[in-house]
Length: 201
Image (cartoon, rainbow, N blue to C red; front, side, top):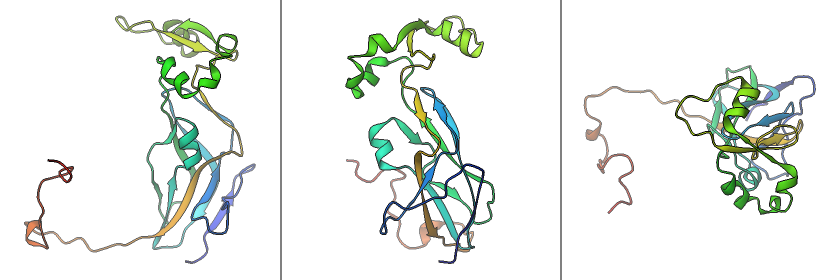
């Protein structure tokens, strides 16, 4: 593979491999980010790439983050084309439920001992009104949510600048000619059944 050129925004870290045999290059967050429960944010790495023609870069999740947290890379794998010169960013989704603290605490039992000291309960309508100037629509249940001392809801995921958030994989791409025909079942074999049919009884 030819060289891949990169440029860095101020404060950004260059992608790096954790070991000589690692397939992926770790990507690092450029800024501190707080992702609220149910929220999706674009997290900048501050990296710009020039990838040679015939290749792509794929943004994939890191297994450690997926195991330890409910942060997910929403469009995994995300494709970076060879002609893209913008900043590489990662679409991060916090899959924690804002209104189901029990499910979150079952995943994080270590919080149970200090929960009452770290969080206070508020009504969802009050939180929306004060935090986002939104009035809870008529008919929706005004459920209880829990805020920490800085008014972040329980389950907020905090990403620090310089923290590993995803990994980058470089891969060769194939660009076949697309040939329009009347009936694709005449080419090769046709197992039928439609999407999702294999494995069904």
